Image (cartoon, rainbow, N blue to C red; front, top):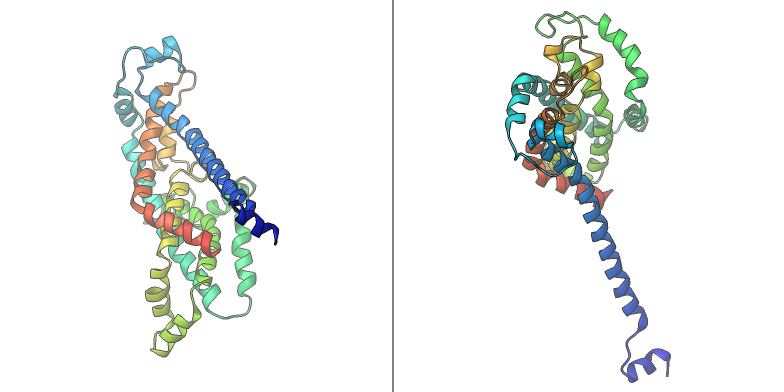
Length: 307
């Protein structure tokens, strides 16, 4: 008799099955502990910012930021931040920059990815590498040549009040599209690569042209990936401060991140008001995530399964 049969004869169970279950349970517990810890670490700054924003400045000045709440809570910091920082005006500026930049990036990236993956031509791999390599350049390393280029390119009056690419919303849209395009092309090309070629062959037999195969077949199938990218792009472009500061000189044209900077005093700063303004500025990105969360999660899940 073998060792396994002897163990079964005496009512024993194989050790390896028990060890496997124990290892699986330990792995799940470790995963849950890690996720809970990361969630707490992510929520602590947000909760502390909300706590500071709701406290009166007099209570904070007397007892410090890290202290028990004394004197109650107030929403006056939110109202003063909205009016003193002119956040409504800067919020519209951010929307005028973010929405066109996100839509243009997704349109150009999806078209480029479709051409690189589903249209056979020489040099497609090299072109994809060039798109991907564009993400390796840090913003600070190329700001000097970009600044000079923006000063030399002239635009018609309906695109720029200054007549230049510099100090214009169109310029910020252009640089954000250019900087985010490589990453989106890389993600969408990998996503489109798993779409079966038989579907395109069947559409070609039915007489579908290149544009129809792209618009009616590829784009609907890439909806989860486009939703995930739209969420990320909205967050990145909306929160941009570097390009708006370096490539725009008129303060009233800058996005909402500049409104937070305007609340910063030279000698004394009302950190309670700044915390309230930061929470107000975060509301649009939260709305976008809640609206696209299903597509965002589906895009990440499919990407991890197919990647």
